Length: 365
Image 1 (cartoon, one colour):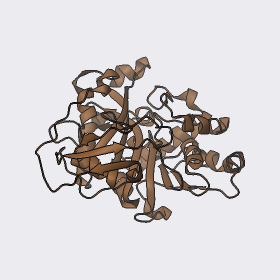
Image 2 (tube, helix red, strand yellow; image 1 turned 135 degrees about the vertical axis):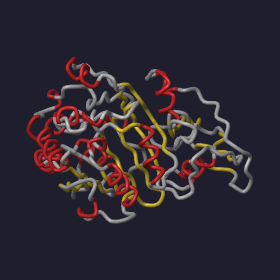
Image 3 (cartoon, rainbow, N blue to C red; image 1 turned 90 degrees about the vertical axis):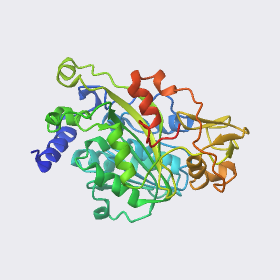
Image 4 (cartoon, helix red, strand yellow; image 1 turned 30 degrees about the horizontal axis):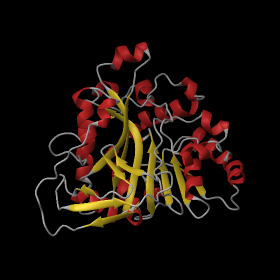
């Protein structure tokens, strides 16, 4: 049986002592391509200093729009790159909390706080770095229903108790709050013999979540719907790693989910229409809720009940008009969407990933 305490110590050692910078990574799993960044995020990225950037280990860019004035929590913030990005997007009226367990990483984040606040032109800091465990957010003073948006970048896979992590996420999120994260997922359960391997765990492979297990976990925690916003395959470009764990297919996914009470586990048709007004910054002509839902500005679009609820009960509500309610049910929602995720992945698994997987999948369309 694995010793959880020993595994945590190995993780701290890997990210605090073994890795001196992103060039020391053995695979591309924890490497962000920074493709598809919005103009606002690109501009914000130019204001992050090299010390923070060089110690960044992420697999995506989990920064949704409409963060201005919001309270954001970054789980596994590391050297603070995404915290400092979110701090700019949230503005001086917003607040960003970064949580990390590794001494060396949290020190880099804190040591660069004064520099970044001056760079942003903020009179008082709008960031706070707290050292601790993402499974124990209450111990860090993060209260129930206090966070607008939770983000994380290739870190949740490292947790030895994912149920505790996601339970804490949905505890601290406000009603209608959003979880938006990038992480490594697998097309099959990673064999248990690899779970305690320090290198494979540190490289975000051994703890990768099998997508169906992730769906079941969210369902058990009361979240029946999640959405994939982007996906890419991960190439194991290290011969030794490929030889060891190459039987498993890994993908980097960016996922959003909302803390809402009335989402169903299937797409249901209530005859509802949603019209996007085109006012979300960086999204003047359309808005992509996920890989299958592109709302063209001004065009009424038939949506399932879950999508209507997400729009109406989240911070996106002011940017849409939703017509209809759930008073009349017309049966299952018929989807006619092209599988865009499969254009960047391969095989049946990619299609399942795009739809939440299986007949009881947690993702609409």
